Length: 331
View 1 (cartoon, rainbow, N blue to C red):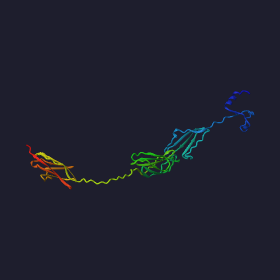
View 2: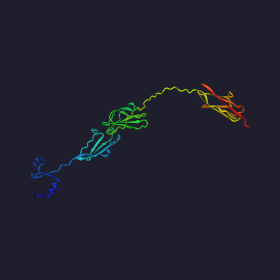
View 3: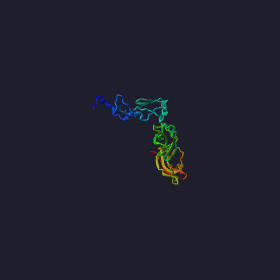
View 4: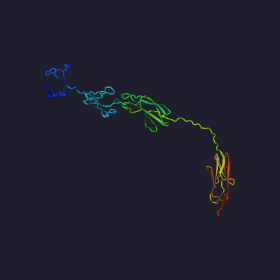
C-alpha cells in the first residue's frame, strides 16, 4: 500500500471517509473521475442547538407601565438553525393595529405605541363588599367577583381589617378563593372596617371596596342584682356637741362665742340674751356654717354682760346651751 500524500492527509483530517456499498446507490453519484469501489467523501452533519431565550433582569418581575405609555421590549435569544420568534397575549394573537414585532438574527422586539388597560394583567377590584353579621368576636363578610380579571384566572382574594382607633390595615386572609368569609379574633370595644383585593398572577388589584357599615365588637351585657336593704333614716333632733363656754371680756374689745350643733333636717339657730331674742340687733353678728354657730359681740359695754343662749330648732325637736359673759371696765 502506498503512503498517503500530504494533500490526502489534510483531506482526511477534515472529512469523514467511508467505503461505498450497494446501499449507497440511492445516494449521490460518483464523479466521472472517480473509479468504482473507490472511497466516497461526505461532509460532517451540521451541529444543531435548541433555542434559548435570555430574559433581561428587568423583565424577571412584574413589568408596569401606565396607560398611554409606549412599551418597547427586546428579548435576546439563540439557536441553530435560526429560531422563529412568536408573541402572544394570554395565548391569543396580538392586535397588529397597535402592536408591532421585529425579529432579528439574535433578538425579537415587541413595540406597543400606546399601552391600554387591556394590555395589563392586574385584575380589577371586587364589585362590592357587605358586612353581613357581627356576633361575639366575629364578623361575616360577602363580596362579588371583579368584572375585569386581567385577562387571566384569579388566584384568590386578600381580606384586610382596620380598627377605627389606629386606622391601620392588617391582612387576615390571603389567596382566599371564596366570596364570603368569617373574620375572627376581633377585640372587644373596637369598631372595624374591612376591604377585599382581587389577585391574579400579576398581583393585587390597585383598589379595594370598603364596607360601608362598621363592625362594633361590644361587651356582653351584665346584669347586676342588688340586695334589698332598708334605707337608713338620718333624721334627728338638734343636739349640741360643743357647748358655749363662759368668758370675761374688756369694754370696747369685740368678743365671740362658739358652739357646735348636729341635727337633720338643718335646724334654725336663735340667739338670746337673758332669755330675750337678739336676732336683728346690729350690736350682734350671728353666723352658722357646717354646724358651727358663732356670735360676735361688737365693742361690748358694761350693760352687755349676762346669760347668752344658743337655741337650735327643727321639726323633730329643739336644744339649747348657755354661757355667762362678764364685761369689765379697764383700770
